[in-house]
Amino acid sequence: MPRFRTLDDLQVKGKRVLVRADLNVPMKNGKVTDTSRIDRQAPTIRELSEKGARVIVLSHFERPKGKVVPSMSLKPIAPALSKAVGKPAAFADDCVGDKAKAAVKQLKNGDILLLENTRFHAGEEANDPDFAKQLASLGDIYVNDAFSAAHRAHASTEGLAHLLPSAAGRSMQAELEHLIRALGDPVHPVMAVVGGAKVSTKIELLTNLLTKVDVLVIGGAMANTFLAAEGRNVGKSLYEEGELDTARNILTAATDAGTVLILPSDVVVARELKEKARHRTTDVFGVKDDEMILDVGPATVEEFSRRLLTTATLVWNGPLGAFETPPFDQGTAAAAKAAAARTVEGGLISIVGGGDTVAALNRAGVADEFTYVSTAGGAFLEWLEGKTLPGVAALEQGN
Ligand code: 3PG
Ligand code: MG
Image 1 (cartoon, helix red, strand yellow):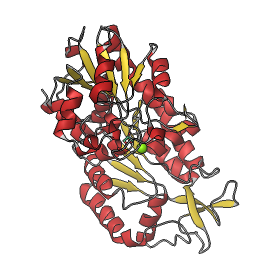
Image 2 (cartoon, helix red, strand yellow):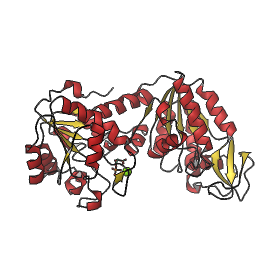
Image 3 (tube, protein in one colour):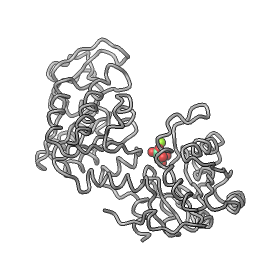
Image 4 (cartoon, rainbow, N blue to C red):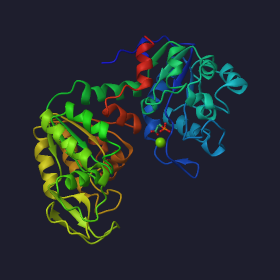
């Protein structure tokens, strides 16, 4: 367990507490379309406010690259934040300088203030010491609640932890506790499911997981590269010709590590990727030249479900098929339902992360039944790769 302080260790009454949140939420026409991240971070802000802190919220939003980009303002997020916290949140047009200072000065105990996008300043991503100092001057204590931005060594995610007494917020704490439960010190047998399109973006992840888990299930278009590496005809399927050797090396490494690696035994194929496209199910030996693999088949899901009965901990990242285009969402949905049911029965600890994966589980209507759903994308992947996340490391060092 990493060692860092939590809100339990802080005396915050009357103090100015800088909370790094991740309010980088999806928006359409000025409205937040998915409030998951805001909802997860609201408890930290509410708790600090209830304890009498003057809460100053910092966040990035999208990638303005060090310039003021009006469409990337955090201003429209303030009402959504207020709603989630259940208290008004003021907004300041800048995160440093006179505007920020004046807004902070007006705060009374329990008040909440959201500052403008930290990435409007180049010093944020550069982790510039002067910029970090300007941010630090606004607060007495630093609380990092943005696990999903912890893979970035930026001024507000990393630099600040070296300048102010620091602690993890409740959402950061929950993310770390669950990820440690999944891979740090898990109850075995552990099964990992890795899907998605490309082997090339997940080599480190697969290599790291092989040494940590007992069973590794590979799905999604990435499985096609493995099937091709094993000499199967994958027809017109999306696959990476340049990664066949990588796939072979991973298969060998699995054997060496004594990890069971499961590839699809049957697949759903079609001639085009389109909603309701004509499709059929075949075993992996029966794919024709003009067909592409778009999902795992029922026998593969069946094997996964059977293995769940002897699995204690499940870690899942990446859909098993082209889940955005029904009916090729069926494999992912069926596997998700099986894992959810097993979790609800009490037989499984299930931990899921990554944007696409969470979207797929939401579509299947079972996200709430998993033990823990991470709100992180890139940070979750880097954690699965076994990397040290700078935002987390800085919190530990701050103690
Ligand atoms: C995310 O959306 O994954 C986080 O907010 C990090 O955003 P970034 O990839 O722009 O750093
Ligand atoms: Mg993003």
